[in-house]
Length: 380
Image (tube, one colour):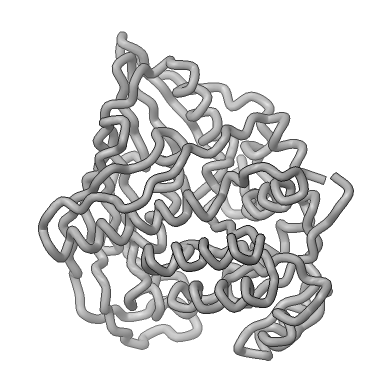
């Protein structure tokens, strides 16, 4: 690769530190500037990471910026991504891409008209653990996937996030916030979804913040916080997804997939690494070797009680999009797959309201697998 894309980060909240700190690991990316509606937040991040702080309009007009990384709140994703495209910039959005399928399709039409690309997190399915699971499935060792279970359940974002309000408003909730990790990985491992059904509920109409600096504040809840969904995939597999912020403790595995020749136990799709286990027809469960995949190697959090550390390579999806633009190939974290994920999540919430199965209006292809060699090629 001979070219770097100039990156402008829009939105300087909690997640922006991850992009600022990890982007330098990857080829093809150079973060040049940032912006936020809160000018002080942009200034602080700019000083911390040695980039330029600009106003939102200035960032869109900056000729050195090739791609805008949209880290605004979910309710602003469509508007900010649309404005970036209209300004002639490629877009890589934090999840969810948008809050409705119509918004996503409109971004697709605008991007095609402008000859621009749109990508979207999550990119954790590119992690070494999930790519090992993909390889195991692709090799036929688990047979044809017939069913599975997914669980992403905790006590809620008000327990740790400094400003958790938007998580409990329309556009938030566990399905739209954490569901993308699971749905993206299911698309990676199985393929597109055909239809969904769901039951949804809300344990409390308010939540009390227990994190600093707003400990004790009471905030409203305007979206379901407890969702139990059933996904039927185009290949016939059926997978249940339990997503809740009303659970204080549980013993469920993050993801289990069952096939005609065995079972596969996949770690938390919110992370790149973890332990992958499998069993054959004999029912004996064993750990799979992750090999030398670079996105399985711990690179963070060695000081947080886990001596093994944690593999965190967020921004890999952005780097893959940059390389895809330069090489003229399909990006793994593409608009097509992100839009299908939005379709799945919107259908889950719609089914929760109607009590009926909801067919999907979109489809997508599985992303190309990312083996160790291809992953290493993304790193500096």
